[in-house]
Length: 350
Image (cartoon, rainbow, N blue to C red; front, side, top):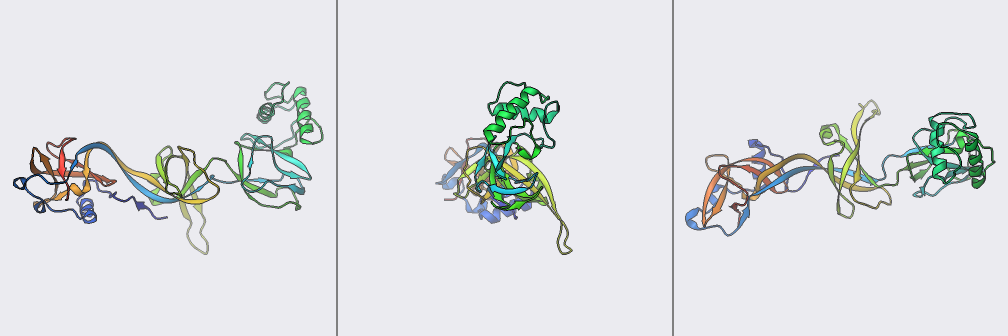
């Protein structure tokens, strides 16, 4: 995806070529085209301001819910119920039903990998017991030991789910995710006879996110925690921050070389709505200068002796002051010059 500079932003840091490019873009006048002090003060002026200039680089992105995770069956049977695409599934609710028995979503990061029963100890027990407690079942100690008391409450839970009350938890009976999930797409359909390991559905988180695939030439922009600005499909601009940066290598096809992209995930600072994938534009910060003097780019003059200046307006008279330019951004340019201060006025094209 090609980068696009924001309108009025030109990357130029004290380099003659960069400044010349700005002169070309903005068609700046030469000093000779400006009135001198004898001709009186110009009609249009602008203030020299002290500000922070931020240069941004735009890249195409996608509004969605982030990366997908696939839930697959642990056992075989007939698929008897599936949620609808776009549905939200929370803790204790069914992700799907196999032979009319629910596979229940719980919260955690450790996958279910063994049968939990009295006497079993481990981190997976603690993870399960935390969920059982969160679902409102009491009368046992939440720890790493699957006790008799735990088994009693598991029987109550199984009864509420319409399952056989065994007091043990089969790994095919539950599935874990970090939190509430949104069903992105279904990989099978009701009535299908499936075997172990069959993909059932792809899910995402429920919070809208923006994702961008950057070329390696733009990798410098992908800094975790960095602020960005996202232009939404309705043209509203929403702030956000980079929460994940991953390098993705895709193998080449038909003797082509592999391609490498930087996958960037962005979380919004404000609440946004997303019914599905949509195109957005993400503005990354490519340069920033804090507490610098700046004027509108149009206030720059090309000096006859070379270099650039501004026409300072003071007490009804004007004078040309040579300046050194820095960052160009958002229609302004950083300047340094003898005697220049914030609050002074400079001539603008009339």
